[in-house]
Image (cartoon, rainbow, N blue to C red; front, side, top):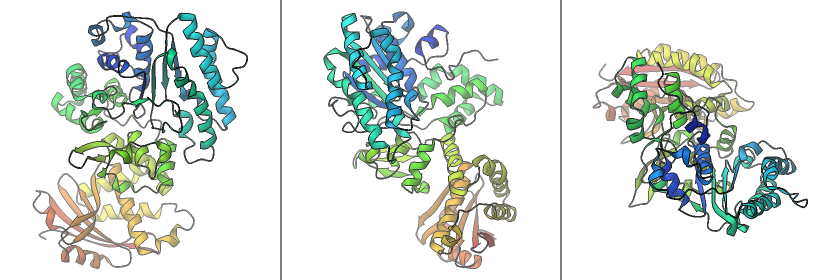
Length: 529
């Protein structure tokens, strides 16, 4: 029986506290954040608790001391003052079709505040109204104003690399301009969102905006740390373990594989996705929750725009400036993939000041591939996963290569290739890359460890798949035969590096037929046979 209330979809600090939902105490970090700088910016992926953090700041600056009883902040805050708060959620202004629609959406967003603090007749533009609201709130209360802006980038995400971006950006510049112009009347300004637009393009006048997104001191301000999971959520793990008929230790390992793995600075603890973790406890089911609303279309569009090689996402070496950079200055999709949580920091090398980035966990890997397959093959991700992929996977687990490749043959034959695609497949280098790409999508959808173009002493192996009991070494040939593929595996010793790992090693040579655009002949030989 469920013993605790989980705040699924509830992002209001006041409600969580009043209605006694589970709350992981971050208030010591919240308090420290308010002393950091008058203007603070934090980016985090969606569903990571940014809105809860924003409403916590709202309650804190309203002096709602009763909501914080028993929390860490009570040992830090000695003076509880009530400041006027301007709290805006810009997600209410997204999906606008024109700059004028965006202006009207922003004015509508400010309407409740105008009812509270008043509005002058000449405040026709959103920025002018915001400036007037700050001034009147200050004059009416005699206190500086706390400003909290959640999802600040929401109106811009859908128009990245769109002709509308420039005019939308002008609207947002005008809207945000009063934040700095009203500095003397501002107690604290907190801005949060998914991506990082440059100060020059959006916050052009806020030259003292402090970005704490990669600050190790605030790495754990959103999300659930390993320590918080084991200390504060041990009863939840035990309850889930009982449902799965396993030990708490085994369930902890399962949760770690599924939801852990995010790091937001070079000295960050591992962070669990809070939305998915809580939903898992609520439903007593370790499933993929982060993608219930689907992979964001803006991300897929940007990956296609930059022709992102998703097979390179396993281990990307990069400097901070290449992924923690302004969104509109992107030269590839790396900053967007990092800032939106599809890849994360895994390692940091102090000597070279470089980072290793990779997909965080099983949930993200499966969900990302689910979103990419329709864009790549034209087939629904769930159709591929639940239909073909599971049959393919089960056949490989049984070392039944004939069934596995027959399933692959039927799948590829059914892919609705776009016009002109067949002509591209006549280029052997393109077609071999296409089939490698398709293999990678299939295996990663099932969270099977698969690598392409693996370097070894003899050259580069097309594909290596590591199952629990068996390692498969694939060589793919379009302009050639299955025997030639097998001969290459043998002559270049592709299977040798895997023969000491304790798994059975199986060599597979596959020939693809360009006419039918699917599997032709193949050879399969176990090492030692």
